[in-house]
Length: 97
Image (tube, rainbow, N blue to C red):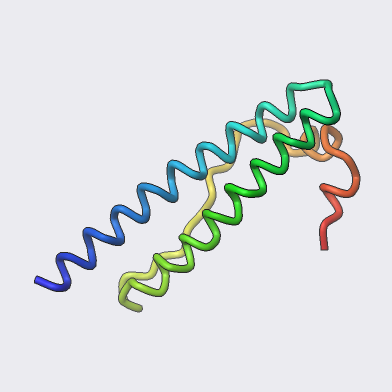
C-alpha cells in the first residue's frame, strides 16, 4: 500500500514538473519574440524562476524513486535552430558560469 501511495505522489510531482517546464518554455518563447529589453528581461527572469522550480522538484522526484526505476530525463529538443537562441539574448544570459 505504501509503495502505491509513493508512486501516486511521484506521479503528481512529475505532472507538476511537466506543467512548470511548459510555463518556462512559454516565457522563453515570449522573450524571443519581444523587442522591449525590459520586458524581455522580466520574461527571462520568470523562465529562470520556473527552471529553478523544475530543478528542485526533479531532485525530489529522483530521491523518492527506487534506484531500479531511475531513468535519465531527456529534455525535449525543439526543431528550431539553436544558433538563433544565443543571438536573441544578451551576452550575460548566454555566458552563465
